[in-house]
Image (cartoon, rainbow, N blue to C red; front, side):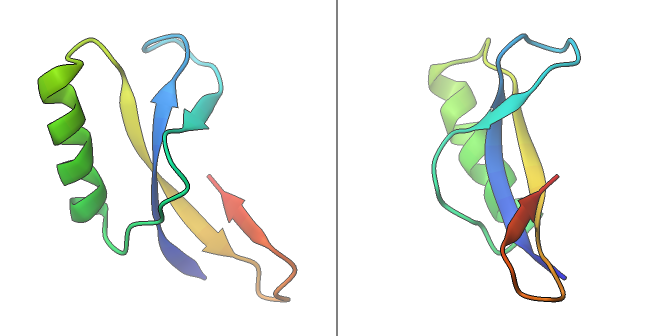
Length: 66
């Protein structure tokens, strides 16, 4: 089940690599996450930010970020 979106920063630009969370915040909508990313881009235009989906496992044993 989709529970929201997290803001991630790519550690190697647009190349394929792991993305790390910017904060522990989970945003209810992709639009809200993208708005935060836009504000950060005003100060740090070269950073690569991604809004990733956060899912809750059906059996309730934790969250999974994709």
